[in-house]
Image 1: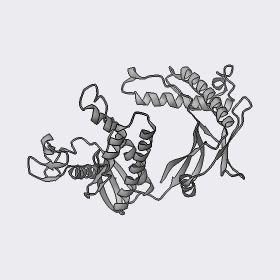
Image 2: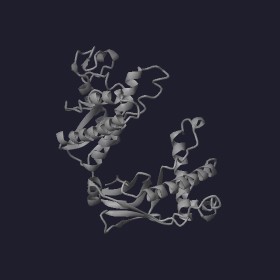
Image 3: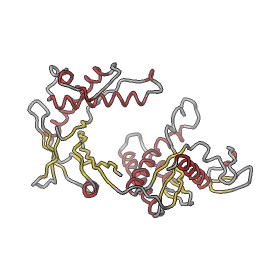
Length: 361
């Protein structure tokens, strides 16, 4: 089984001259990408394999970029258009033309190459075939995460280059997923990040962190620091799930998405709760759990969260009044009582098990 991991290395060790040259290249690259977006936008069939010389040379008179980098720009424009079409496939009338903002370049070894260094830096990225006689050598210092992925997997010859960092990709290979072990369900909450079907509560401090973020001025340095701390806290909680459950075979979670969608226009929830959900970062949490599953050879299953917090795990009766309080679940049909999050986690587990059984996996 293979999966991809990435690691970012800062460009803070580059001189101001090199960073200004890189910004100059990024701005020019952005213009060419947007040129190709205009060219391809109304075409029904988009094929990156058909990017031959006549198409690649279209912006030749208006840009100094090399043919190689123009081809990279054309490929990225097609990717951006296809992503936009996929996102708005159910609402094509609302689809907007994407715009490249000059913040990054996706390139391969035809443009960038990582080379070892004999200086105080570990290595450097050499950018060639850019155009306008520009050649860049950007120094890199490896860090703990980079060394971890490099020692465990194979570094790919594809790079994401931005003004502030370079992102490297690594291909990992592990054994097939486990076929033995226990299965647990996880209820994701804003009061407690994770409550498992084993009645383990992980991440009780998540609400305090979210409230601290809400009190900060929007975009302030303190708020950004707290957002980074929240991610670090989520990473720690994800590892704690596997630490407390060493013999896992499968994890079942809720398929949470668009939780704030139209809540403002429809006035479904108040402003304070909307802000809490916006700072919750539940998508990062679910992604982090999935990544840990990949690394630990554990199966990952997501289920529809509808009524999992209102259904009784004992008799199956579903009623909004079953959860009259935030933390307490009491079934109005059979009288079963439990912690609300624990009851939901068991429902999530049952849904996941039945889904696996139906699919035969």
